[in-house]
Image 1 (cartoon, rainbow, N blue to C red):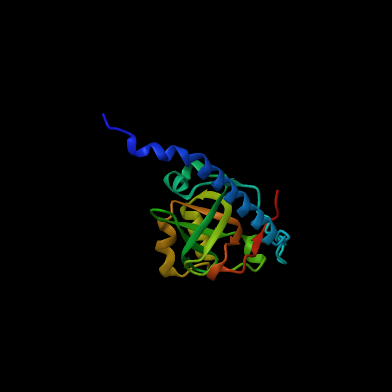
Image 2 (image 1 turned 60 degrees about the horizontal axis):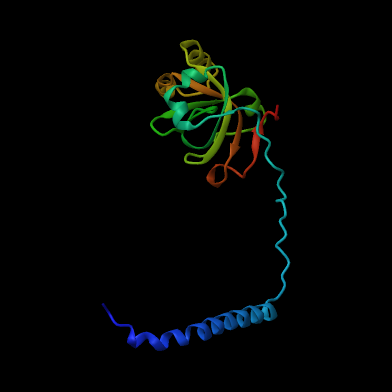
Length: 185
């Protein structure tokens, strides 16, 4: 066995070192209490812009929505923070979902309120009804001159679209944080 003869004196200084550490800690805390300057907590103020009130809708994950848009047909959905992929005409645009673009058509109320298509790449929150696309809808939009003939193939590509009731620009190039469309309900 190892002999502890060399460590005999170490036990005699343990208690004084412990007491010295406590005294040093107490001195440090006392110094902090003297040197600390009392400060008021920062005031939290609301921005001057009014808060955007979003319509009542079902918040849907874009990846989940993309897999089965047919399951949301007739439902008012909300897709948060999706980027605008491409404008198609005056009232329609595609949004970037994880695997494929998805068509959004701005409703009459949005257009009447002066809402325009957000810039490409701009993040937006889209609230609207999911509608299954059919030939009569494409023809009605074409007859109304909502898109160029060259863009018809893009519109026909969509199996479903969101009839947007409200768009909330999430900042950046897409807008100033304002929203247009209906009221909460």
